[in-house]
Length: 93
Image (tube, rainbow, N blue to C red; front, side, top):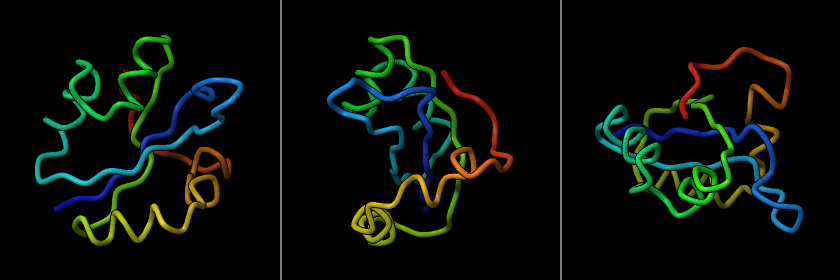
């Protein structure tokens, strides 16, 4: 299983400044297609509706437990290579 982080080009809204999504899947390419097509997580659906681009920036080996652990840390910007001026993986919209 793969755990992945998406980085949004800009915050979802002025009230919700989130710019990251962490998820897990057995089929990363299929899951990213679901996000882009609007059948993924609600957060990516909102990003799509608002024309906010996003890209995969981190990938870890692990399952749902590791996904929950990363989410519980609530430190997306510190784990995000884009927020830290590093390279990332490819863009996905």
